[in-house]
Length: 600
Image 1 (spheres, one colour):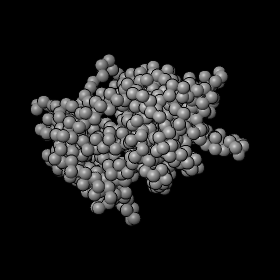
Image 2 (cartoon, rainbow, N blue to C red; image 1 turned 120 degrees about the horizontal axis):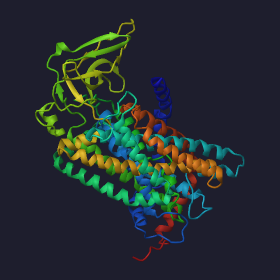
Image 3 (cartoon, helix red, strand yellow; image 1 turned 180 degrees about the vertical axis):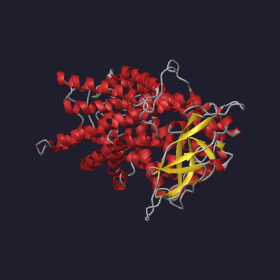
Image 4 (cartoon, rainbow, N blue to C red; image 1 turned 135 degrees about the vertical axis):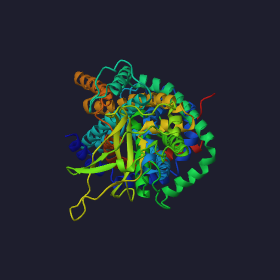
């Protein structure tokens, strides 16, 4: 049943995130970049002055300051997408994925400026101390003059995609990764007597319960509490993570020029990235898709979420807040994501060698049963000395633990994404009959040729790799340079990033509920309370254990992201001319010196 659901969602994702949607988004970003006269420059100059409070007015409508609005939006974007999402993009797409992350970062600045300006132009300030805005208000306002319910209907559809994205990428992705990276390094007390099953992991669920309590306590306070928490949390967590990341890069400074060349080479398609170590290889299109997808998920450019946070800012100049929003993709993608990517590349974590090697090739065999290949291997050997050093394991220990996720490389049918016939077969560490560690390998679906015969498969090498999904790969990259650093840094950063993202995304989803059900009256109160309760409960449920792999995790986050993009891109196009007219009017006044700065 689970596989049937996964198949349906993957089919939907192939439509929502087809190459045509990606092309439309890139084209939209390019057009608004040119239309604004490369407004990215204004974000990096005037935007910085705005968040420093140089243009603040106490009587402006809004609930939070420019800096708090930026922090709230950044707390949603600078999350585990920067740690786990980037790791996923580099591990699967290779160095070329980073190049396309940069492209999205630059174009994303124009997208953010435009969509936030649109929302500020149409936000609802009926209650000046608690304004509401977002793409749903933009489209509602646009069609209001024509009469009928078309605008409200489209706005309602967007709100559905907003809530969907909030509970998947803004919630489940964050909680799952925190649980995965925490339990990889630490044992959770008090759950040792609870049995682990295929769909329930007591350790990860305990982490989810703690996260749910923290998130629930914050989101009941609304945007003012979220903005206050984000304003303190975001600067601290960014400085902590970037500081440690820069130290690691300085220790690998000699590799950086070569890595930049690889990023540009494979990003522009001057050859496909070849398979190497744990990396399966990939074409330029494959690298671009992964880089674009993860950068979009991380920066939220064009997704329509950030305008909701910025609509709460104290500001009477819509374009001014849009310019502030342009800073987000720069900080998120071009700074934080780039640091993560370079750490993974420079450390060699992305194309690392095996951590152990089976000594007897003859003892490794495949058998075909019920259209599935079954892999049999001998007792699992100890990790090699380098792996033990990186993992901080004593020389006399094997380095393995029960339920560790591992994989081997095999040759099978050609993969159209990588252009190679190299594949992974995954398994988990178990206890063998002789008391040694063994591996329970997952079945591998057989591929049949035109004659109806199963395409033979073979092991590429006797090497066994430990699997580091999501944020765990970033932690491993830190450990390869400074053993033990990843254990503490990435776990702490994962908690901070995830909590900040979940509280901001809870607000985004809540604004969708408010748009549909209203902000006042008993029915609205029930709807908002129910949403907050469901959102909080889902934090814990997503860590129970039914999501087990990166592929499943990416499937759910792609569903939410793709749905929002498809809903928001047409809204940006329709209201784009109004936003650009307002932008150029504002810049004209700025050049003439009509906006007076506050005295220092």
